[in-house]
Image (cartoon, rainbow, N blue to C red; front, side, top):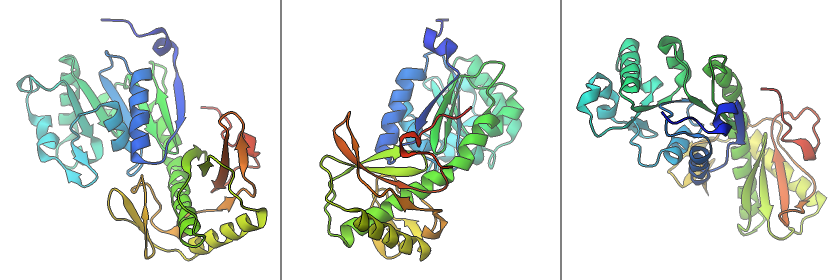
Length: 313
């Protein structure tokens, strides 16, 4: 067996901000595979709540992999593969299991047997909701991927980290990502519909917030940003329903909004906590762009220059 690279041997964890949009999530998935995955990694554990973007990340990490479920339903043949002999599936080198779906159809001991047999046969297994399997498998993944507001890549040893460690970080943080995405879509709706401003910005990410990136500084004053913030807050306080339309659009109240990540949103605008806009456009001297920043939740008094402050694992 080939040895892991030096980087993999000594890596404990790496953290990425979870990007907005399915395409950006898949691009990050491809990058994670190139940087962190070894050809010898056979057990990959995915941890994250429904609607966090796990499917898009997995599609980016493993292009062409047929999932046992997707956002619109399940694949019965893939679900019931648990009961098929591994040796009968000569063409399959990689398998996907979603524990939440899988346990509704087969017993836990069948899943454990399937995973152990597949690993013995040198097959690769990607397990969503790996934290549900770990207590029964009595074996940690070779690489753990947690998806919440951030994406955590960990390479456990016998000393951890454990799947529940990842779970305890990504599950509570996922709500802020949904708040930020929903608040950003409301802000874009107001800017385009009520201010008549064309869509001439890109998106970037920040903890508990969103960033709109402009190539040229928008001609807006602090009072205008105050008015924009007040209007967005009105829509938030109206507690309008937010619903998925299709893979390109969501609906907020009666308005259809084009969206790159339509499944990662609050159920209603009223779920957004403590929305505010920064009252100036911030230049990024290295990239030569200008940033409008919106925040949700609490930031414990951090300055704008340290919103992405590193914290203890």
